[in-house]
Length: 105
Image (tube, rainbow, N blue to C red; front, side, top):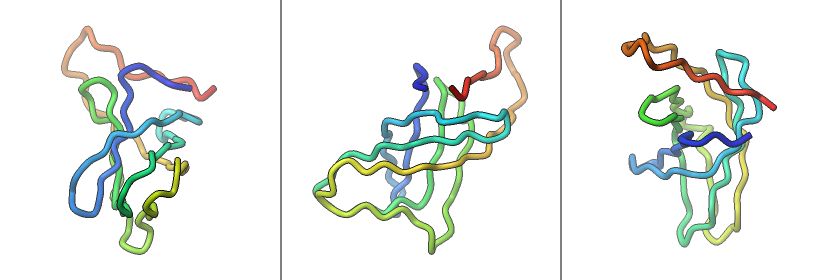
């Protein structure tokens, strides 16, 4: 499923960030399971973490252990990876705003 305003942001080893297309595979209310689609690049990429944003709210982030960084070779074509992310449960600061509800279908 795709959701408007939903962003998966991969964090490279130098701290730069790259938003990529992603599909929500499942959501159990505590974890999201996503499939990320990393476009081809001219240079090899090493991603050391990722975060998920819906509109202006950060839903969660994950820093990968050093031995589990995501390596994408140069000129590799579209690279798809599955990621799991624990969700942050922020306090509601605005009574009008509803919490994110995402179907896993």
